[in-house]
Amino acid sequence: MDITNIYNASYDICGDVNLAKRATILISLVPEAKITDNKEIEKQIKKESSIPFLAKVEKVTIEETENPYQKLREHGFSRKAARNIVRFYEGKSMPKNSYVHTN
View 1: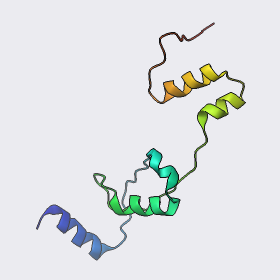
View 2: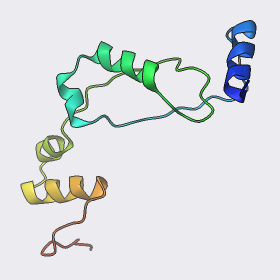
View 3: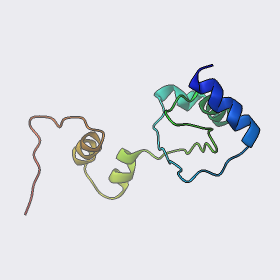
């Protein structure tokens, strides 16, 4: 019997054990998630999660996020500035002809 089966057997006997540590994980979803129902996404995450040290997925919450580019435009940023800020925070390189202006 491997360690996974021993753990599963002990977990079944003990039931819902209150452990000393808990992790919070924030994930981004793939673009295909836009066309998938939130309940289906939650169900698949709970069923198919493979995370080290995971006993059980207690809660999954799907949030609709706003378009950061549009929010920056609403606050008065130019199209180019908004695009560059979003690209920077997404970890994408900025175009070679752009620069950061500091005072």
